[in-house]
Amino acid sequence: MTRRVVVKVGSSSLTSSTGHLDPAKVDVVVEALAAARRAGDEVVLVSSGAIAAGLGPLGL
Image (cartoon, rainbow, N blue to C red; front, side):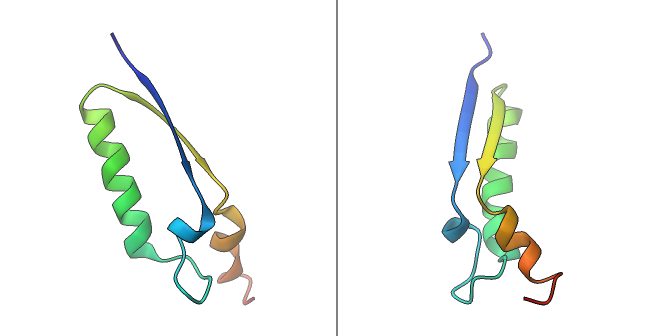
């Protein structure tokens, strides 16, 4: 039976101390979710990191 796993990741889990998106932190989350998928789980990611992700490209 497939499990549905809902993971909520806050901005502070995805950003550096300056508030910008931290690719290394994103990689850690992605690897964990990918491992769950490989194990057969259905993964739903909920993140409030969208604003943080847009700050750099917008020059803010």
